[in-house]
Image (tube, rainbow, N blue to C red; front, side):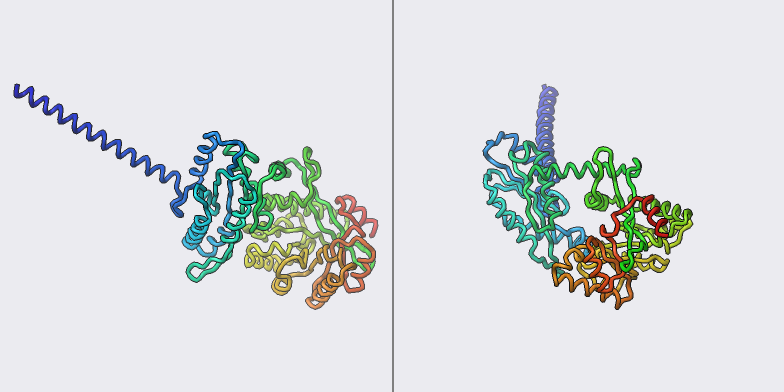
Length: 466
């Protein structure tokens, strides 16, 4: 009996202990699950929800079968310039900045709205039950106003340039993915329009975005498919219209898209970094053509090649360019390199160093679109220039606007004082050419003289003029 009783007691104790162990385990697993959910759905820096919580919330709201008359509004907010702050001041300062901005956003929210940090420098606000676009616009403008206000941290002050993109259910999307995608499309529109702005999604944006993506995909195969070509716009001497050089201009013709304007595909190439590969193709093709001209006895003087900021920033560009030209038995004297004033603001010190290196090798440096940037006089002083080109917008207006004419006169005088060559772009009328010659401008390009020509047509033109 005693043994039986001990056995029963032991059995009951074991069961009790096992029961406690199971309860303890379950409690532990619940805590672990809650902790895991906290990690999955929360942003550790700001304490806000993250992209996963945003998606979960949208799915949840849409899954509840919301009334089709009720809008769900998604605002995507890009803080603007965070990468620059991170680069200049470091991660810690950047983190403090993001936290400060998140606090501002919390204060603007209404009860029931969801605020999350959806990306490195991006926040999202989900507003349910709003049917009034004007109210959303008022909130958005308030957010822009708050976020662009100067921020001071540890004696450092910075101004950000936020952007907001807005998409709504059910007007713009009927599922979570479409809502997020369309809000991003609207956000990109805001960023491209100069920042500090708010854009609501519309179908035209989507069509435009899809078209640009299609163009970019086709452009990535343009070299492989032999779709690129060069044309040459002659540069003439104004006194006698004699051709004294030419500018190489890139053209792209695609079987499906047709002839795509450089004003469309060049910015896309720069944005996607395809411009480096395409720029290399331009240099090599220009060298092949110039080599052929030399062998034919076609004396074109110099060919101007446009160089992008990405090429100037790429490692070893100067040496690569010099070696390619030498490979085709050509000289640096056969070319000049055109850079735009606005491209110089990217990494000014590096680009100035590269341009000085190129000038030291003997390349002539041309400053294109002069007068359209913000620091023209500064660049005239510091760049190793041989030539400046007056932007065509000034040439177009100078006979109808006294202020523009005064600017043209000033540019011409500056070039003389600094011993720089001067080329006027976009000359289309005799009266423009006559005025420029009278003011002391020696060279010009434009449809008055020649449109851009294929290489074989320019060959004939040069041979005939000889």
